[in-house]
Length: 293
Image 1 (tube, rainbow, N blue to C red):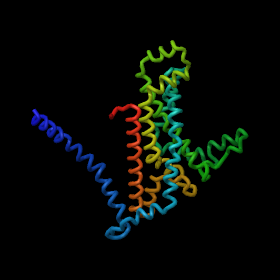
Image 2: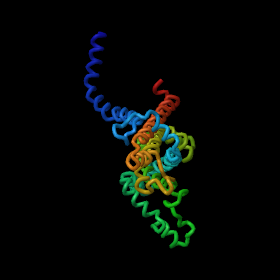
Image 3: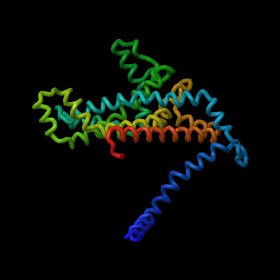
């Protein structure tokens, strides 16, 4: 019996070997290569081994820390995105008047290309762009600011664009879960005299807990390693490096300054941070739900 079970296990592993080889080639091989590059000077002929030189350059570069700080600044969007997505999804779920139109309007920005969105808002937020023109025409000249040309306003402006584009996914995600919540829970809450906010807090949010957790983790990864396109299209890291993020730093080091070793170091750091966030999410899930105990 034991031999038969071992044989079945071996057969199962044989079947998944092709898929494992593909995964190793696509994911693990580049990671290993990246680690190797971090110890080499690829700008010189023969790519000599330089030890921790690339790491020392990275950790003594103020721009690197500015990039990481900006990535973590984007984390401030996460509670806002969760809250806005939750409220909109609940309102659409309750089928307020025109809810089908609202559902389409809310999700439309998410399916648009980031490049298209970035170019549009680059013109929209220009000094003489659409927004400032509207402010001037209605007598609100004090609001006609240099949105993307100010070191203080550029990053918050990009954050507003990301908020506008990304929250539609959260709405659809929460709405899909809301459709599966038993109506009896809300009926029981009505019998107990619960108002709208009480039903939201004691029924809806607990039922959405696992989805919210998934969405938060997805946003953590997005804000850490998927905001490059917005920066590339809208600000090019400026003004004055104020909107540099780690991905843009990697791009500039690798393709503009030919410091591939330094960019490899930053990529490794991002991988480590992402892995730590994944482990943190796993431990939180164990504490809350005990699913892996």
